[in-house]
Length: 216
Image 1: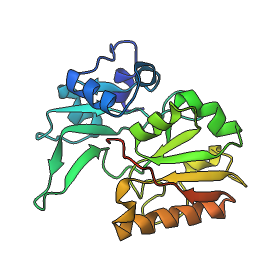
Image 2: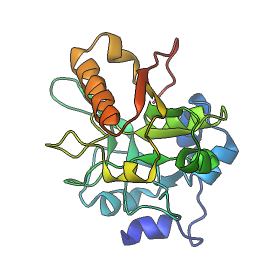
Image 3: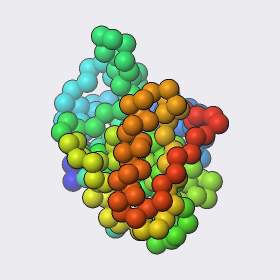
């Protein structure tokens, strides 16, 4: 495992949250119990570049979202939310980063993991870690995918290997994309491709549009 990630997940680190990060999580509706169970924590500024494998001098602070493994413990995977977001020349914002050339992973939530892995209740597949955790707080079996293309390896349209741990055959999968699903044809196309990939595995995907959007 990335030694810097291992440090942040160990008892040697107190898991403290910066006030800015705590407010961001509260705005998304996450409880203290969920934050603790998911090991969400602030990254000391001096560790941000080491954790990612490259320096990001424009970033003031970062919030770590560790990825639980379905077989126990944590994946060797790093993804952080940036404060402030990075802005490119066209004004597009990058809110999250992970080490370069690393594939995306599925985000599992501790509170509903047994139901996700062994149950036959509809599976809620939610875009974004915080949203997945918030849906799980409602008592629903939920997983997160990170970005509209975060369910497959680049250049492929098959589901990530992480999905092998999840029973999908004949299971209803409620797909919850971000709000721009209705206005961005690229997002809609990607979600439909995700639905097709799930159907290949025997799942019964349905798109769910939320009336209001939780902050990311």
